[in-house]
Image (cartoon, rainbow, N blue to C red; front, side, top):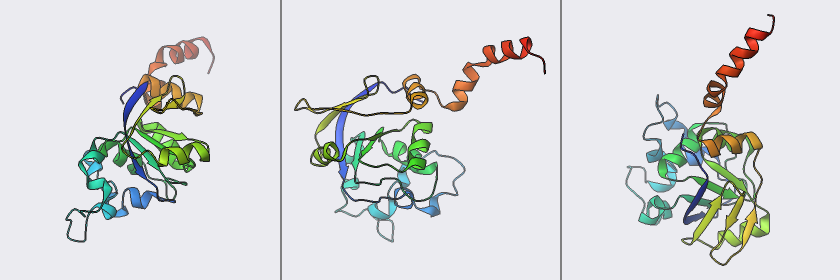
Length: 192
């Protein structure tokens, strides 16, 4: 997993509310045995017609979408069923950050576990970002801030362990493996 400290990049806005995990990655793509290429299926039902042809009026098919690492989405993003495929599809598509005024808990946990930074902002701050399609933001995980070109600074909170793992580019297993010496020392010094 790639470490995340700070990112400056363009914003893609999807203002729809209640974007659920089945819209992010339709269920028919959940049978894959690998997450390789999962980004190709992100928002597949929004991006392609029944014959698999790209829909010309879908913002996700514009060249700028693939170059936008920051997704600002409508309220209640990631609701629906729990599937690790959803944040993996967003990462595969090129997003590193998802910002909303409300992100479903299960999606947020899955996102943090795979290296996608989910940020929840106050509704008024979120509204400002919804108007910034195509503009540039800086997301600073060390400071827990989102900064706009106009100088606005929006603070956010993130679980301390998730923040540590993202900053250090490790998932939970990586964290446990990094503790092997301490675990062995504990086991050696305590009765079983």
